[in-house]
Image (tube, rainbow, N blue to C red; front, top):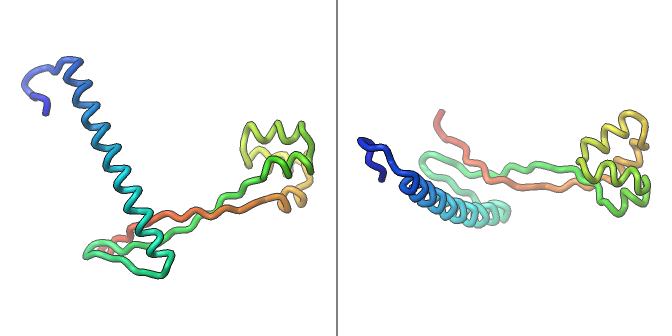
Amino acid sequence: MLDPTTEPTLEELLERYATLRDTLQGLELERDALAAQIKAALAAGARAETDLYRADLKVSRRVEYPLDRFRDVFGDAAALEVATIDRKKAEALAKSGDLDGERLRELAVVKEVQALVLIPKTR
């Protein structure tokens, strides 16, 4: 730990920073591995809770448009324009009438992402 009564050297600051970064990275790896195990168990129907928390799965959906199919339907120019941006750009083009909105919706692929959520049991 750095001595609070003296000004730390740049090397001491770097050493402390590296230590904290390495510690955090290790903890994040462990947290991610534990989350994967817990999410798999919850998805299989298990329940998990402690005195303070109850674990739950939060599902979010993300809409994507497969590039090859998008290009087949709307052409290279449209694919290039939206592929370098994101789905919001494609939806903006549909909204403005530059793309057929119905055909764009037909191309949409919705992906679900599960996040582990800790719900406090006391508030």
